[in-house]
Amino acid sequence: MESNRQTEIEAAVFRRLVAHLQNRTDVQNIDLMNLAGFCRNCLSKWYRAEAEAQGVSIEDPAARELIYGMPYDAWKSKYQKP
Image 1 (tube, one colour):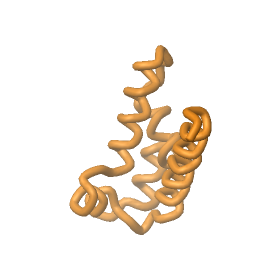
Image 2 (cartoon, rainbow, N blue to C red):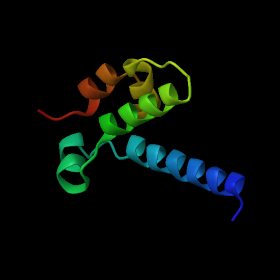
Image 3 (tube, rainbow, N blue to C red):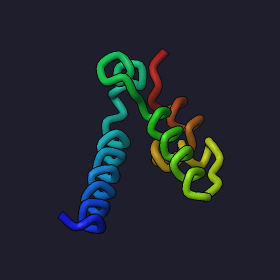
Image 4 (spheres, one colour):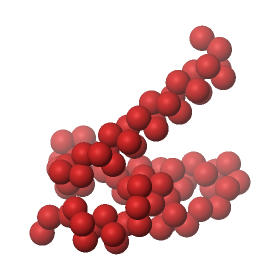
């Protein structure tokens, strides 16, 4: 498989994963951490770290908003269970 094609597929899979997590607001981050060892916050940190590794500066709130589909505080107040 060509490198560009593989990158396109991986990017599409990532977008699909993010969309899935944005739609599955019933799944709490603690559940993801317990079952999979990562959560939405982990994805946002990985996103930020990779962006910075490629010379693109992004703040944590902006990276979280990309993953959550809304500001993190809004998601927490709307969906996070006590």
